[in-house]
Image 1 (tube, helix red, strand yellow):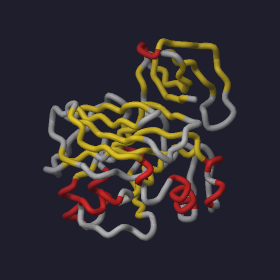
Image 2 (cartoon, one colour):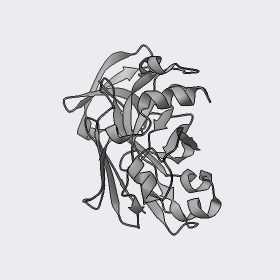
Image 3 (cartoon, one colour):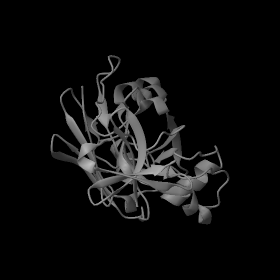
Image 4 (cartoon, helix red, strand yellow):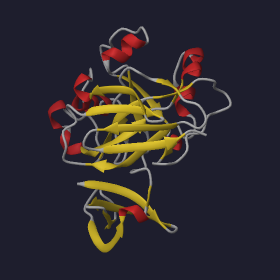
Length: 250
C-alpha cells in the first residue's frame, strides 16, 4: 500500500495512492484508519513530506564504499546522529543553500518510517514497528562537517531533509536499487543489499537508545558518489519500488 500526506486548497490530508488517484484516509495511517470516500486525481494534489517525525535518526558510514570514499574504517556498530524535524521538506520544495557553507552536498538514502512506538525491540521483532519506506536526501554542509568535528550544524539546516514522495508498505528493503541524479546525470548508484547494518539491526539498535515514535524516520545511510550542489541544480533521489524525490536548489 502507498500512503501520502497531501494538500488540496488549504487542507492537509492523509491518503492512499492507487492507479493515479488519492483517496483520503482518516485519521492517519499509524493506527486504525478508514477511507472517507473523497478521491482526487494524483496530478491535482500537492504531495507533502509523507510524515511529520518527532526526530530523524540518520546513519553514518553505512555503505563500505562510502566509508572508503572518506577514508574511514568500517564502523563496528551503527553510527547514529540526529537531524531536526525542522529540516524536513517535501517533494518539489526548494533546498536552500545557507550563507554559512560553501560546500553543500546531496546524499541519497532509503528511509524507514516507524509505525508504532518502539522501545527495546528485539532483532527478530522489528517488522511490526515499521509502517513502510520512503526516500530521504541527507543534505550536508560538508565543509562545516569537517570544521566542526561533529555533524549537528552540517546536517541540521532548514530544508536539509527532503522526504518523500510517499510511504510504501509491504516491500522488502533488503535489495533495492538506490540512485541520485543531479540535473539528469547519475551521481550515485548502489543497492541496499550493500548496507553494513540492515534495517532490522538499525531499528533494534536505535530502540535500545531512544524511544521511536510513530512517524519517526530512520535514514539508513548513503553509498559512494556524494558531491556538491549549486544554485539552480535539480537533485533527484530514486529507490526501486518506491519512486522518485525531486528538489531544486536555491
